[in-house]
Length: 245
Image (tube, rainbow, N blue to C red; front, side, top):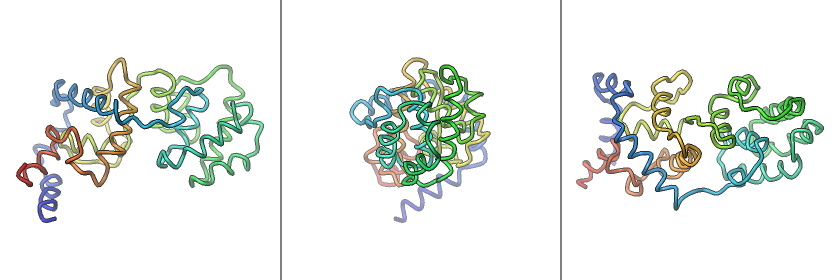
């Protein structure tokens, strides 16, 4: 326990010089970025989490899934998502339903306001021809923020978009050795780093792998011994050093 406290202090009390240095994402080498991409994708080959919204699904249901997943663990969303797909096969069916019908499905997940946003979304989409792939339009829809829009576009529409949430931010801060920041809005450094890390081609696979890895391995109470990246991770090196590994 004492060693762990020392590690936490060392990690949080980085010098001002290092804090400024790591804020320049350009100082992170392409070699290290490639290592992260390769390692995450390799890990995902045997650890991919198969959820119903990750299988062949419509863009409409893909967007609904990303809204249901907001601030909610994926395992909790499965039943609500399956019920939603069964009752509302498309936007027209959702727009014809009552708000109470939507609330009955979403209620188990908490955040009651999501039901209203989803119901409004159904009415909006039913009035449109085709589907929305424009991020600017998506961000004007109530209940859809930067992460949800990027996740929907990259995971369900084949549009390359970096994604990052608090879990991803925690992983990057540990691996690259810069202070963890919970506030994501306006975080230019994190946005630039995510842009560089996201591959040009298999970005969907990478983003799914990143979501799974930061949820299952590099979680808040992580066990560095089970992490395949620990030997090159800033945090992992500190732990290994303290434990004489």
